[in-house]
View 1 (cartoon, rainbow, N blue to C red):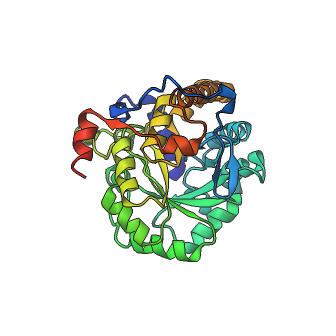
View 2: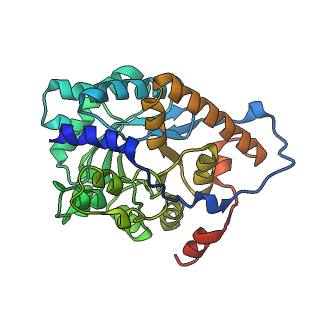
View 3: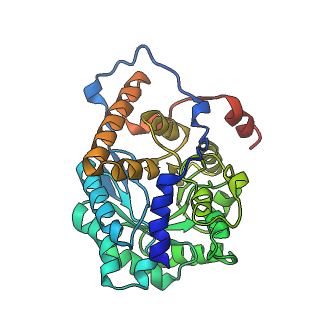
Length: 340
């Protein structure tokens, strides 16, 4: 059943038409006409999970465990290696209860990027401590993503309906796993209140995965037509607002900004708002499915080159300076941020 569902998710991602709003368009960054910089001085390297990566970009969790997934993950891992950026695999739940062939679609990531690359495991936040350790061991992961997906589960016909004890389970995993734990939404955002609870539970890495990108309510709706869920497609906390809310809770947590990140401007704004890293998934998957490795490579080369141009135009020589940029909020984002 999981294999069928995973394949349908990929197929329906390509069919989906709803376009949410990250509200990153409501972030204004000021132009610096006297940057006093050379383009060659721009340094985009950062340290993430104890390793140096060339850009503050993560190829975020997508898929695994089906025939198509080996090829997808192999090509994504090639991209991760080429650019020296981290990669998170999709949920490994399917590999914990399937045969060795299923595990190969996940193991290929570490095999491709090598030991110097950053690889992140992935399971539902309701997973057992035993399964978390197995998922980490499977791909020799540098960290584990625990994903929160109540909205997705609720609209999935075969999805979970009981979310009691999830926070307690996360706390237990954080205390008993040697690797860092990243708690991640899957596209509906993390609020200020939830961020506080996670931090109190010992979580130090949060991936906001806000609304405005891949919409799993629509994707599930496309799997069946017994109920129309289109009036719920707009549900969620827009990415920009989620970044602001989570960063307000603590300056110490490591914040990953994701959810509808598509352009160089999205990346720069997400970092300026308070992100330490930026996760991209749907846009990369789309380029991959429409043209393979070379297509993704060209997209990232262009996007990252333009990101460096924007950094120069802001007078920021490195990512730390970019993260400390001043910004102004406009429109709906300003209205919502003023109410936090």
